[in-house]
Image (cartoon, rainbow, N blue to C red; front, side):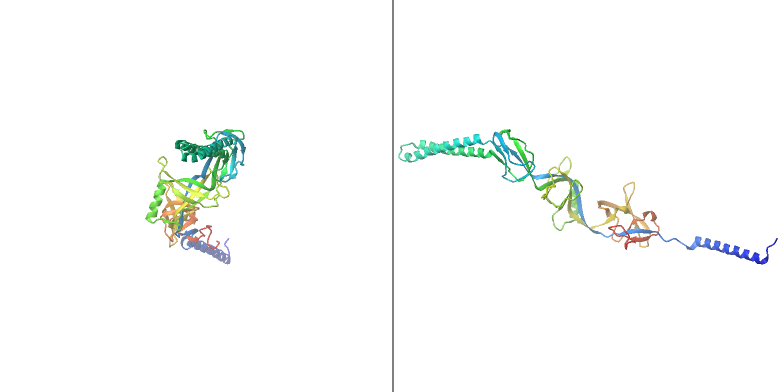
Length: 376
């Protein structure tokens, strides 16, 4: 049965409208509409002064070490110090039995008195030839010899009181009361180490020393404005030592077995944090690069062959790969030795959306926090 004319008209209009929408959709898909370019985060390269710091391992050494040895034979009567404590120069450490040495002093004193009396008695007699000149000279010489013997005896008596030769921190007592110590065997009784200030001894490759000198001469690096190298320490627990040191010297010879040069720095140690034999990392700042180029590490793609590449955003907002030569790591950045210049825009986030040759929408980020500028 045929549909009424009015009903056929409605069906025709509906079909026409549907066909029009399909055609319009096809045209839109084929020609005009394009999605917006993806956003990527960028940093703009700005050369800046950069201190050149070398991290070198080393050991803490006392500035002075003094072995306290017995200088006379005898029995130790008393220990006068607390083990592990700080001692001062001249402080009494031990008392060795002085009795036999006191007796020697008394005997030498008596001999000196006798020799002096004889020389004094002969002096007026030699003038009247009652005593020969030879006998008088012998008496004077005997008095001088007795005086020397008394001085030696007094020195040995003084050695019975053992004192600290330097100020520092004393270790364990190496002898106890009642022990027999010997001057001939040089019995060690204690060890004192001066710990404030204290040394930090470390080594550096002679090749690195030569490289630094060449770069300074070529003008690639500049000397510090202070003219003095800066030395800091990192403690074994990874924390920074609160006091700066000063470089005392760099050895003039190279160890032929290792190719290393020895350096020594001095640090204040008022709190006793630095202990002899302690391992630490020294950070030596000798120069600075006047215009160093830093690039965030997350912006660098390292290839299988070790080559480094970053993605740049050109003036037309297209993506361009750029090979670079990496230097040292500085915090979360790399030093770019070549390949980048001031004003280059480097992609730091959104690399998966930045195919070479594609167009992107660059958004600058805060270089310290890597967050979009303006808090986006």
